[in-house]
Length: 383
Image (cartoon, rainbow, N blue to C red; front, side, top):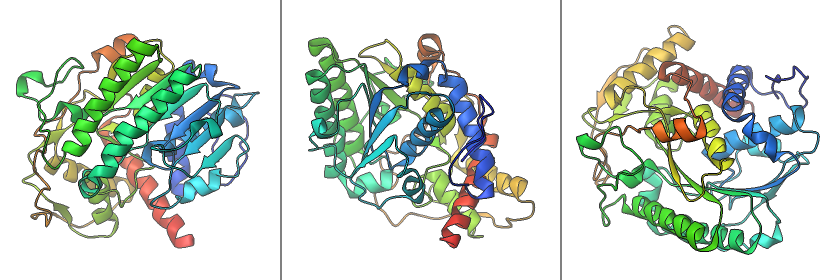
């Protein structure tokens, strides 16, 4: 699918839509620049990836595919566990025939993991992460984040596992006071336990408690990562997070709709940087610890983010977008309830202990994202 960024070997497989090809090559190079040395330990091993049909699964599986085709003499075998409640994405269908990949259509909540094991490594990324969808499905969200994680940890306790990576969230910090922005891992959070976002926030917090105690009591080698606003290829246009929503408007030629006053600020971390950081955490020896993974670049307001995306659209396809920014009120009453005003990580710990350093600036990440979305839409039209 891609040209190797390490060996120059000619790849085998299906060719992507042209718009996507350069993005794929660049993203694989970024992930490998972060984690290429650390992931040598994955050769010949077996790995369980839960939620593998989702946003992060896209980058994980394509990077593992690249490792197997260009670097590993003995393949990394991967079991992708996902109930496919929203169907199987086209990119996963393309990878499904790879001999190193096995798809297990099941929920991590009640799956008997021994049926697909044994595993040397586990990446637990199964969760509803879009605020729109976890507000619609709060019980299912809590089940995946608590019961699903407990299933993973119990498996790791019963078997000899090299490493488990658990995904928490920057949402565990709630709406930090200004004195705690950028936010460090030791900040305890300002979180509602009953609001419309609590199903996600509080289940992720409890999940971290589970991980720490399984490490302390049973010696399970688990690490926790706290993503800060990841975006990029693999994040579906229908996901209902801010960058896909804005991108959908732009690519359809509509005005960009802002469902707030535009003042809340965030830092956004491009997915190739983030996945590189997650793999560094997976392969580290820092058991029972949590790491912020994101970027500490300057925060950007939602209004300025919309403007930056509109500019990126015309940079990647000059004159293609003539719309404007309009403000409306969401029909969902809870849309802005408990919505954090600011979100910015302190990534000093990940820098010092993992060697993590984000590389892709926001403007470049937005251009890559729009190129990938254009390729996705072209591919849908072909299919």
